[in-house]
Structures are given as structure tokens and as C-alpha cells.
Image (spheres, rainbow, N blue to C red):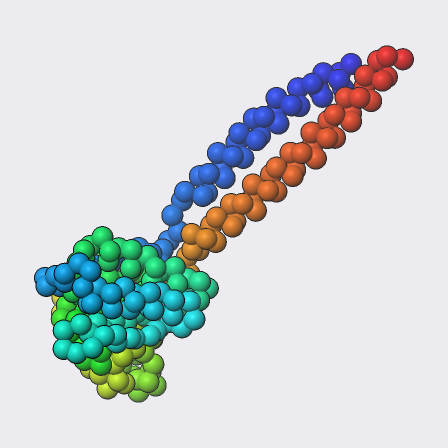
Length: 293
């Protein structure tokens, strides 16, 4: 009889377990990943507007479609569509090359950037958006292969302590060292200070070096002793962080990865609960059979 009472109580215990597991699962699902590649950093639009249903609008639509389609296969591309002088549209996109799943994540990031441009830059002849994982820009004036060292975003953290400043300078100097000058994407670390730098893919090696030098100089001047800093210019950026104070990595799980993990957890829980219920039903029948005897 004691066994039977215990078995009768188990379904109530299982309900509590299922509720707790579901609560835990949904808490996991809605917890945002650190340094989400779709996080918005900055955006801007041209003041000039194009006419609806114009040839320029058709060319722009075709350009944006080309950008997002290409992003599934390569981390950078540029396009020019239309006939001069009035209907030409220029555009490019670029993703961080260290994304966890380059093709899928780059495609998703560019798609997200274009959706934000559609909201920010309605009927604008030009626009640009920088997300954590990618950069997208289009315009009716050519900018491809042209340097742009205008400051678009500057962020600085609280003051640093100890020898952190020396380590930061070591990382920033590495970005300009001869061994890295041919790379458009550069990552460095000195102690607990990490840094990342990237130039837009349409720049030459010399232009990239010049842009990064400008960004590093401004970063040192504007952020001073800060524990972390971001400097985004028109065609490059430099970022550094001390002891993970400011996350700019791309190794956080993408939304699709989180969904897949959540589904796997749910399927495992459901399968486990189903097996336990079957086992309990079997035990109950055994107990009822013994009581009948």
C-alpha cells in the first residue's frame, strides 16, 4: 500500500517538474546572447529622396536583393546598378569574418541591417547601418574605394587602473604593425586587454592602414584612460576592452542556435516525461493486480 501511495503522488510531482522545466527553458530562451551580432550600433540616411516607382527605386531594390543574396556566400561584396548619371546606385555589405556560422550568420545580419534601413531611411537615396556583426551602405554617389575617416560612433568606458593602459597601447600598436598590414580584419590581445579592428573591403591596404591609424589616434585622444573604447569611422573601426568589461565579440550564439538548443531541451524533457509516465502506469497496473489478488 505504501508503494501504491507513493506512485499516486508521483504524477503531481511530475506536473511540478514539468512546470519548473518549462519555466527554466523559457528563461533560457529569452535570455539575450552576449554581443548579439544583430545589435544596432549606428545608422544614418541621405537627405535626398528618390521618387516612388522611379528607375532609381527599381535599381535600389535590385541592389539590396543582390546584397542579401550574396551575404549567404561571402563576407564582403559590392555592387553598382543602373545607368549614369541619375539612376545609378552603389552599395556594399561587410560581415565580421569570425562569425560562428559565416554564411548563415552573415546572411541573417545583412538581412536584419536592410530591414532597419527600410525603417530608418524611407525613400532616401542613401543609407548606412552598422550592427555588431555587419555593415551595410548604399548611395547614389559613388563611395566605393574612397576613404572616409569621419567619426560616426565614439564610445568610451570608465577610467582604467594599473598597467591596463600600457596593455591597451600594445594592442593598438599591434594593429598597425607590419605583420598585420595586409589584413582588413585584425584581432589582438595583451594580458586582459583585447582588441579588434576592421576596414571595409573596398579599401586598399594603404587606405586601410591610414584609416586605422586615424581611428587609433582618435581613440587614444578621446577615450584617454578608459577601460574600453569604440571608434567607428566611415570606412573602419577599432575597439578594445579590458577584462571583458565591454563585449564586442561575435562568439555569442545566434538566435537560430538558441532556438535549436531550446527545441532540443524541450524534446528531451518531453521524451523523458513520457517514459516516466509509461513506467508509472506499468507500476500502477502491477500494484492493482497484486491488490486484486
